[in-house]
View 1 (cartoon, rainbow, N blue to C red):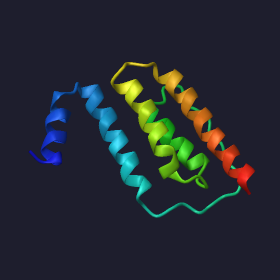
View 2 (cartoon, one colour; view 1 turned 90 degrees about the horizontal axis):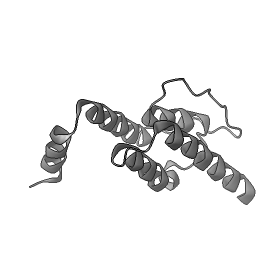
View 3 (cartoon, one colour; view 1 turned 90 degrees about the vertical axis):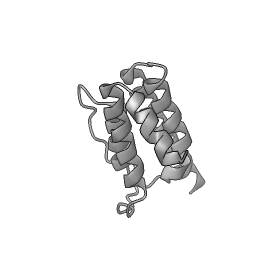
View 4 (cartoon, rainbow, N blue to C red; view 1 turned 180 degrees about the vertical axis):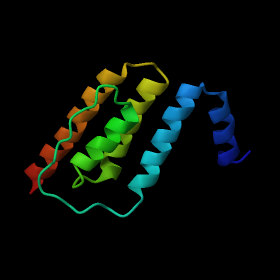
Amino acid sequence: MSDEQKLIGRFRALSAEQQALLLEFAEFLAQRGAAAAPQAAVPVPEPRSANETVVKAIQRLTRTYPMLDRRKLLVETSRCVGQHMVHGRAADEVITELELIFAQHYEKSNAKE
């Protein structure tokens, strides 16, 4: 069975809400491969919306911190998405952690320069 077939099977086994989250995350992953946004030296924060999803938060934080290497954030962001989708961790908690992760990566990258 190919990876694509496995993914389709697992997708079909999810609830409609989980399918929507998975699609949002897939869109995020596809965007990370797109041409990089112009590099900014200073983050341009966007406010968190009232009903923001975890994936939308990742997209917002990616726009806020375009100077960060997304590959270095992938493991931590994927872990957070998994905790939310698979283990049911509250979105608000996960988003707060994601905001901290992005800010810490930004601080580390500035400390190196």
